[in-house]
Image 1 (cartoon, helix red, strand yellow):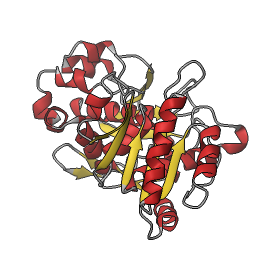
Image 2 (cartoon, one colour):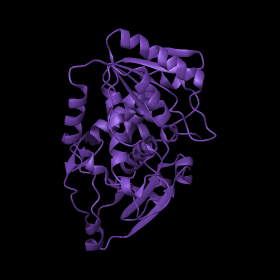
Image 3 (cartoon, one colour):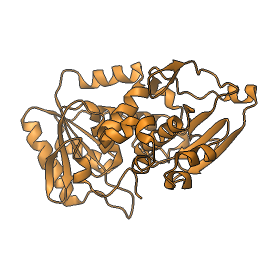
Image 4 (cartoon, one colour):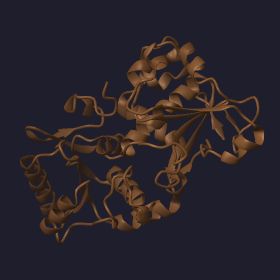
Length: 328
């Protein structure tokens, strides 16, 4: 289905002559990076907004490291790209990569420039940044995509995600099984790549002390992280209360050939588990920030240089003022 910004629907299970398509691309058909999970969500958001601005149908072509539709289902809008339809209907197409870049058409703050740039029948676009501030500077955005101009970042992501995606039943059932009837205090701990430390040893100690207090309050503990050492330490500290999602910790842009889907599946499950915890602490990372954006529960904590502080979905940008989802 095609869901316009006003809520109208039409069938889009195949590509048709006379229509135009904006396709978020993270596929093996086009090489190089897509970024991590938060990069991909930010990129999909930007492509989706441009599709509305240019009156095109939004689709997703995602098979790196495996098809996104293995884990996420569509709601009213069927966003799953069908390659066979492109060949069958002989549609014109182009691939444009703006990975870690801002298109000149977006920088121009002119909606007409977007129409000129994304002018083929099918526009495959790779993006990994959130262009919301640029969109807000474009004349007419408030009429075409009102939620970009009226909602705060947290609610923009919630509106975008909940309009298009839902967790596959198998994934949702698995999380229900993991959670059981327990109450959870959770943490997302991003340690960072070599040369880019996100969480220092002292700050890590602050998180462990925080979670120890929650454990004494009879919370079960869940920790999502990009570090096997952190996961090992969590198992040592919370041997009686830690609940884990099994699987190998990987960066979804750098998966082993033997692990095309398992690492991605674990990342998606970790992400959605964070959205369901009664209490959550996040570090400076897009993965944890977007999970916090999508949460129903409101008990949220942010790790700062001064320690763990209370925050909310709506104040994350004040706590972490340096841009993370759109570093420009």
